[in-house]
Length: 271
Image (cartoon, rainbow, N blue to C red; front, top):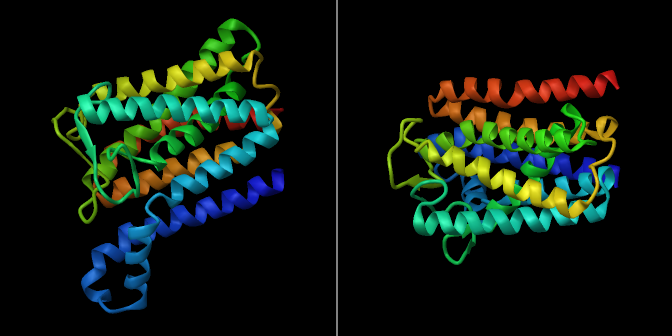
């Protein structure tokens, strides 16, 4: 299972890289590339594989979780995180709560109830799982206090990813994945979006942990793949943000997301 997880992570990284090249280079140079095989390929990929990065990320995280946590814990986390996040997203796109008023556009593939792309709950799952695993390494969760702090830190890491992801995906000059229907102080986004992210993360991480009935277990020697998945997705979002000129969000992600992850990784090395 470790080998499968490694292969799937490589596929996930390739999918992220393909998307990054398409968004930051091919689309801005579409006029120069008109009629070329490169443009035709990326046009097909954007039309048919918008959710590829999220699907491959979910597969990679599930394989890693099976190896590091066991299939039962991983399956519980997958079901709970997808169900809770889908409910939150469906509510959000209908009522504006808990994230603020927003709408997904057409580039992320088939939508649940015509509103939420199928890949979105998968992204909550795989980033939530690796974020919580990293938090369990940074904060031993064998006591009630440690369990609570790990849940809070895992949710914090989710918000750290969103600090750079949301502004970039809604402000790219050549393609937009969603649009906001209300204005807020954080690069046009309402601050309650982050409160909604945090509450959603806390809810499904805490519920999954309660259903586990036991700690995650010793993860320090197996956390490398989880760190790679998390860091790759944050760096991917940072690259998009830089292409959109949103460099302050990159700084925010460095401070809020990658620095705590570096601490968790240092604990792995020490172990």
